[in-house]
Length: 375
Picture 1 (cartoon, rainbow, N blue to C red):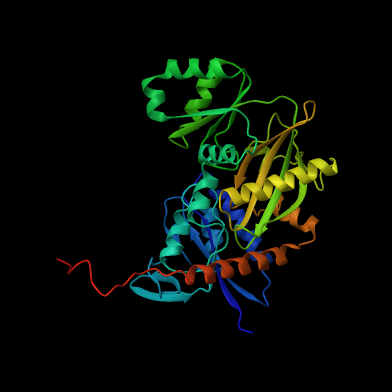
Picture 2: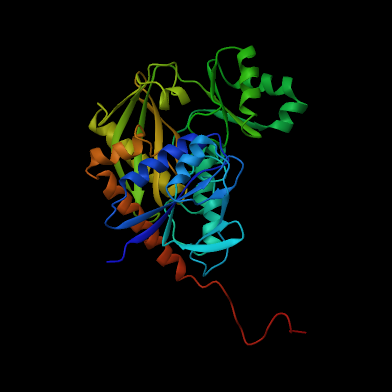
């Protein structure tokens, strides 16, 4: 059987650039080489696309300037990445794309839209579900509509903060009690997130969050919570399957960027030591959240659980979860009985299933009378 050429897209213009590079390395190392040829496609922090074979990952890691560019044309029929070296142009055939882009300009529907225009199969959620999964505010509003429990929150834009800082602070303090969490609305990997205990910290945290996004969300902090994660996998909205549940044990004050990627004391307990009832509730919420955003391929859903009151909160959904060696999503599926190479197989198969369905949809309309000539 002919091997499939998988274009792994990584890097990107995001605060999660470095995490994306690590995820891509791990994905390419675990693709079954008897079935696939991995084609690494890097995007620099400045937004330049490069496709220089095995050197691509190293170039992004070292921040090296590149002599070659790459282009993905938003045009059906190209079916490949165009590599530009000096004045020479060549097309590298690609059968399916695997975006491993975390955060803005990758996980938010932008790359997915480009791939839709090019009529190419790709792993994971579509344009709408990717955009919903990226925006912490809109997804929480959607979850509330579906009667999924979320922590109390409010949000505001940078312009509002600039024009009415004091009013905004008073509103926050009227609605919530410290501690609070302040987050950029559209970023992941806990970049730009702060836990605050007073007004001075709140002001600093809001200013810090606005570095990464023009929209900020403030959430009520819940004391003494346990943190759980659960993966969703499916070829379409109506066929998701939930993984076993894992629990994050954090040595730091909360699960921030350092705790996720740099602190060796962070532990992931799989399966979580919880009751069967709580396990099933988390798994049901996971598939419901996946359905709510019209997900496809994969997602990871994060939870907060207040044991004293037996209250579970859906924290957020991630449509391109981490694939680094320490990331929870692959580990959750390994514990569920799906080895990492098999997980990648399933994701690629789901991409083709979704692509087949989408190709059957009629994109043009014809009638006996043209609207351009009708008087």
